[in-house]
Image 1: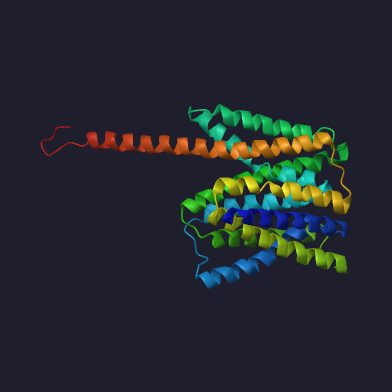
Image 2: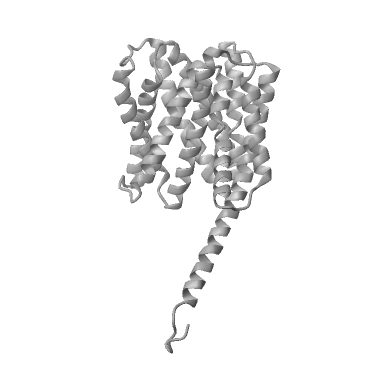
Length: 314
């Protein structure tokens, strides 16, 4: 039942997308959104770390730096695509990260002449075909750039996810990982705002949108973390795609977005392929880890065999 927190997270992220749309209509740009969202989260997670007794000091600053910068790039790209595309379309593109993660695993396998999971290859091909189906008849030439940015958001999310896993293997507290992401977002957002038109004056709608997307983003992050940490990883990973359903429905009901049959087919293809890619990527990663462990054992055995004993024999 703990995995159902992912459905709650999906609702929060869908509402977050709606608030981004309203904020963009008030002239609030992607870097402003990044700053407000990140600074709000920075305060929340600083308080959490203080209550947990978690220090800000880390032994892995470079891993945090790469994870945080990739995460910031993913957030900004996601905000931009949400501001310029239909809500369901933008959210679908933002959730292509499992396809990129699977691609990274396949590339690693090819470079190291390791076992190729052809099921994973098929799911990736189907997933990217789904992207083509979704974009083909749906967007006009003036939306190509925003669509490309949305796809890039998925790629950056995959890179950030890979480093979250690495930091997890270092036993870094999750609150510290998110804190550094929020810190990087606050600094990057504040640094970019003067070059992108400065801060915009708040209207009542703009202020409400800012407060709402800050709260929804933070609660979405917390409930997503609860789902993955307490629930079944596979089920939680599958349920996160409900955000596409909620976003599409909200886009239709609130903004009058048009969802054609072809678009729906593309979305479903991406979702099914993403779930399959997630499962097969985990299986392939397990195979890769087993191979690495076996090679380490063989290397240690070979090293031990080459050490001479007391009589001088090997």
